[in-house]
Picture (cartoon, rainbow, N blue to C red):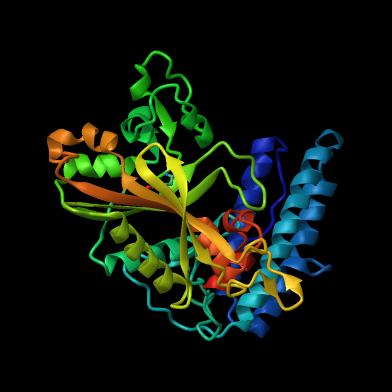
Length: 389
Ligand code: DAH
């Protein structure tokens, strides 16, 4: 059994050696404590005012130290005192836990570390306590909305395509019929990757501003007929506010075949909106402009919040700004100039035609869930996100 001995030397290493020996004894005796009676004996042996180990080291290490070594010895004794107190407190808790054998799964260590010392795990585990709960994750509301949109189109026979978020100027703009320096590029608030000046303009990298580049990428790989939906992340240099985020999500669509007409576009999108927002919503198309579609349109759905009336009781309806209509997407017939970029892949504008559309998934999620600030989607606050689980 360990007993405190007088120090013959007070160098830092001698002090350290003496206290290491003490600590090892402390650890060994602490693990042996199995019940309250044993714990009391253990506590008294180490902490009793009269002749406990702590009292002894106070006398033999500190009081006996020569003047010039008092400081060092005092520090070491204080440290040891703290460790003894902690070990005694821990042993008390351990002595109250029923000793239960635990089945160790193969490689699991049978020891735990406590104060730099290894302790047997058995006896430290109370299997009657509730386990550690790991909360199950859930789909993010924006991803959930994207998946819902995608599945509406999958049921119509569309397949899913994806493309890179870091895109070249060629796919994001040029092949979509945005000529270099065309003012339509300015509407996209593009974030460019730095240090690209040495590259030819069409190879310069940027964060895609829309999912439309995947139209070209897919047509390069697949011959017509095609029907695809493209969910994904996009970026624009927009300052964040309640309805803007520099990062957001779109779902794009493209159908190319022989004899695709504007009525196919209208019929498909009308069906999709009824599937998404309820069979009573109406759709409405207004002429618009996009470089890659001709003709182009913006599609509105009748406000599913106020039923198209523009008011909610006596209150004005905010989501539709009292108009009764909500703008949902941009669409149009694929511009023949776009087909020209993939002509050698079977997209001869004289033989095929197609329609395309693109919608903001975050905006749809805001409307669907009645959330009034897009920032909430991306701040990662579990209290907010949990509501959609
Ligand atoms: N890419 C457009 C945007 O982000 C949205 C869009 C409009 C996509 C018309 C289309 C389309 O495919 O045909 O503003």
